Structures are given as C-alpha cells and as structure tokens.
Image 1 (cartoon, rainbow, N blue to C red):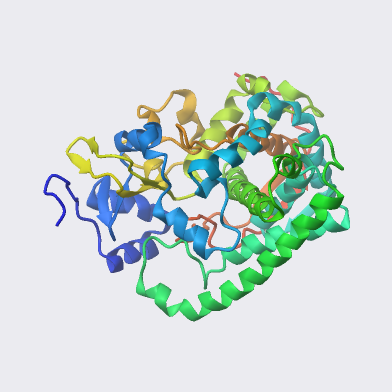
Image 2 (image 1 turned 60 degrees about the vertical axis):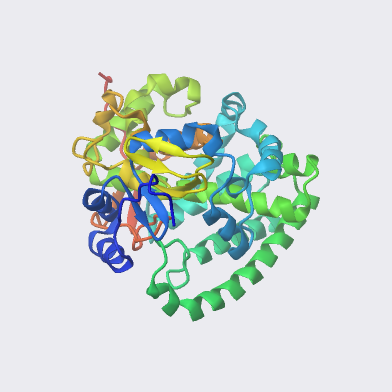
Length: 450
C-alpha cells in the first residue's frame, strides 16, 4: 500500500475523460482541470497544469535526469523513435553535444539570410492567386524544403534529397493516421478496437522506416554539404561518429520538431485569416522595419513588438503538444500535494496556457495581452524551461518570423473555414483540412507603428 503521506487527488474515469474530450474538443484539457483540480490522478499518472508544480518539475535538475516511462515505451513501439527528446544519460548527452552547436543564437542568426531565400523561393511559386487544398500540408512542404536547404545542407531538387524528403513526410503523416494513433489521453477500450488497424499500421511503418534509413544513407554518403550555407546536421552527426542508424533516428527526430512547428505556423495563418487587422498591422510593421526585400534576425526582434506579441500568442494558443511527460527524481512537495520519487507526471501544456486562473479571457486570441508579462511565468512554457528545455527555440522563433515576413509581405491569406476544431489527441492537429487562397496583395499605404 502507498504511504498515506503521498496524497492522490482523484481524477476522472476513462469513459468520463473520453466523453469530455469528444464533447469539448481542445477545451477539454481545461475542462478536466476545472472539474478535478489543477492536479489529479488518471490511470496512475499525475496530470497537472499547476504552474507552481510545473516550475519545480522543469527547473529542478533531479526531476529531469530520468525520462518518463512514456517516452521509453514509445522508443520501443514506434520505429525510428529513439532520439534526443526521448533519451537521458550518456546517449542524450552525446546527441546534445553533437547537435547543440548548430542551435546557438549566434549561429542561427548567421543563417537568417539563407533561410529567408529558401522560404521566398518556395512562396514565389504561388503566383498571383493560388487555391491551396490544405494549409497545413502546404506549410509542411514549405518547411520541409527549408529544412533540407538550411538544416541538412541538401539541395531539395536532387533525386536523393527529394526521396528523403518524401520519406520523412510520408512517415510522419503515417503516424497521424487516426485509425492507428498512439497519442491518446491514457488508455481506453477504443484503442483495443483499433488494435488490428494498429498492427497493420506497424507493419507499414516498419517498411517506411526501412525506406527512410536507405534514403538517409544515400544522401549522407553522396550529398552532405552540397549546400554549405546550411546548418548541416547530417555532417555534424557523421563527424561525431554516429552510425547510419543513429543518424536516421536524429534526422527523423529533427524533422519531427520541424513538423510540430508546422502545426503552430498553420495556427498563425489561421488566426491571421480570422483577424485581418492583425495581418495588416504585422505586414506594415515588417515592411517598415525590414523593407520589402529585407529579412529579420533575432537582433531585429526588439524592433518588431507587434510581431513578437503575435508570435507569443500563437505559441500560447497552439502549443506543439497538449502535454509533456516527466518523472520525479525524488520526493516532491508543492502545497498540500506530495509526490514520491519515480512518480509519472503529465504536464498539460494546453490547459496551462488556457486556465482562467492564469489568463484573462484565455480562449480569446489576443496578442495585445503580451503588452505585459504574464502574472504566472510558468503558466507559459511553449519551449519548456530548465535543463531539458527545447534547444531549438532560437531557430524556431527565427523561422516563425522569417515565414511570417516572407508570406505577409507578398500575400493575403484567406482560410475558407474559420470554425475548425483540433483533433482529440496529445499531438494537436486541426480536425480537417484547411482550404485557403493565397492572393498576392496590393501594396499597403505606409503606416507608422505606434
């Protein structure tokens, strides 16, 4: 029996949790917290959006040394899952040392011009007016080409690079197959019903993983460094002595991080279509500060206050994961809650970013809320904080503003459906395709920013 000193606030049953998720969609995560408290137990895991507890879990090194059992199980189940995010100890340290130099703020800034050129060359293909069947997939394709040129140091027009790009995208979309997804909130009988589809998907994914390994091997032996201006992650990994299998894992992992941002970027343009006044405001600010052919670096961020407020609000409303898992390294006490060492914890990022105790009108998209810093700093952690924070934050933020600038200075975005909810999974995606039109805009009158 557990010691009585370890409190266990009761949470919902499986059916109730699934009912709330089906009924409330993306608001379900806050609804769970409002009904059962900011911290509650669900299937043996502590689920929390308590900012004070989140601070301890992220910032105290003892709770970051051992990865959650959730990540370790995913390593065993998902082909090509082993990578920087899911590892701890020596394997994590080795990978961190190999790729970290490419993600420093100073180095990322030196590639801003090249990244800008990659993005512009893609969006210029849209012409005067282009109907796009799915905004998300279009952003996926844009960022994949950018990843190849600026991240992997490859020319996406070569045969081997195109093969690798298609293999990465196909593999990632396969993991989002609604009949065989793994990122449910806990375990339910619905997953048992889908077990035959899951087994079939696993066979398919292993075959695609093999194709991806072969594609990585071909580009890493024939084309690495063909675009020397890029960050050249494959070259960094090869120089550190990684095997082809390890390089494949990390390339897939790095692409997974890019693909997660694709969702946030889609959310950004979805909101700009819903709030055209913000599209005009940002376009004018970017044009005034950067000029029509200019591009941002992180050093110019301070001159783009509206753009930064918009970016922060996007990352608040569209965190790339509904939650992240942690495992306590020693006994942890926060308020009346006491957790033993080895306790599995799920931090609900979406609920943290939308809880009414932390945010005024949390369901309203309002970049102006960022004129002031949040009252509870650890209620906003899109890139996490502490020893296991996202090392790609500098690149992600720069990439966000580069894409925003390249598109807004050239096109108006009209999404045709402004009532699309999020799918009910831990890895968020829009529930259906976002059809839209990209139309080259007329030059706006110069506007001075206030």
